[in-house]
Length: 268
Image (cartoon, rainbow, N blue to C red; front, side, top):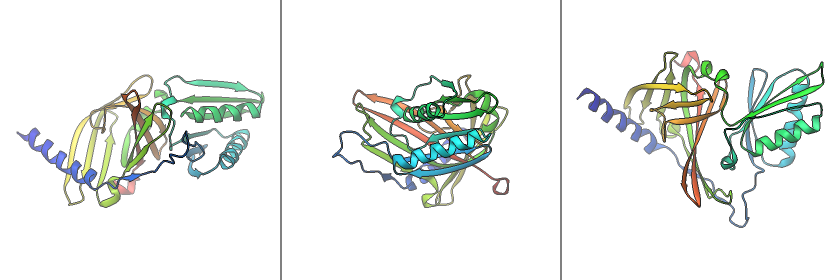
């Protein structure tokens, strides 16, 4: 009886939060045969510093890549991921690496990896004059497991529809905070996770479950929405981005992306 009561409260709180989520539909220009890939929302790191930048043109994208190459050449490890994914369908679990002494080649490779929907990490060895790059759809478990152990504020969920031609008919945004609700996940090192839901009407509920991380970096938990298995596309001490695809009919698939912000100690 207690578990049924807890489940009822949890579902009520979830309904209050997601029922209040503002749903924003991004219109698509149907006059074009394909969706342009010029607009990008890039999250990137230089060393330990994380930043975000919205880019509207290929010129802006080219300039940011030059800046990242300059930072890598100066000795910093740089990484980036395009949160605005209109091409997730091309992303695969296969990782890619490159070693080259050519700046032009590493820059072209970075562009191609972003086009494939991958996260990119680049370093430069000044002794050998070699650029080294790694790109992946799911962050390696070796660099993810310790970072997941934290309390995360669930900031938004993006649901994208993708047709067989690569066009994106719709992109919906759900934000629990938009009308007073909020959701938090606390991942513990013992493999347990707690979900806390604050509803817009003052209803607060918690539920408990487990989480695990596969060898290839897939995060699994029964408390995550819209499916248990998620690719960890991006994770730092401040931001976590998860995604997965729900293959539908031959002409349309659905892709889900979850974005989280780490909770500062003062907020806990």
